[in-house]
Length: 156
Ligand SMILES: [Zn+2]
Image: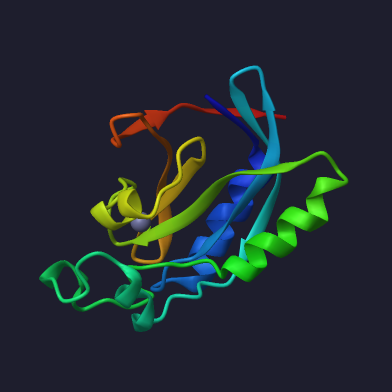
């Protein structure tokens, strides 16, 4: 389970619709209460994807990695991650997850999403059809490296 407010969900939706047909991305800042992540702030980031990022992956030439653009890939600048981490330390917050959008694709993690995912993070994906968000789902990586759905609980 991951706890989010209606306003935070709305913020993800608005961001996804603003960047359509490109993917949006951002950070989920919050705390872990017991076992459950609680989002305190949704932080938009730029989609920093460039084709050069593929060169760092295992099979840069594979057909999986062709026809890539910000319409189907996202990346967050590691420098931004470090900056945010520094900034929120004093507020006792952590980066607890990442959200991004899937323009005209289901809210299901792609093979690429799995390849770059971190354990312990929540991955929220917003699916859009024709520019409108139709579904938002959260996922978590299991020890066997498979994503399983995580229930989103909306708190006031
Ligand atoms: Zn994705």
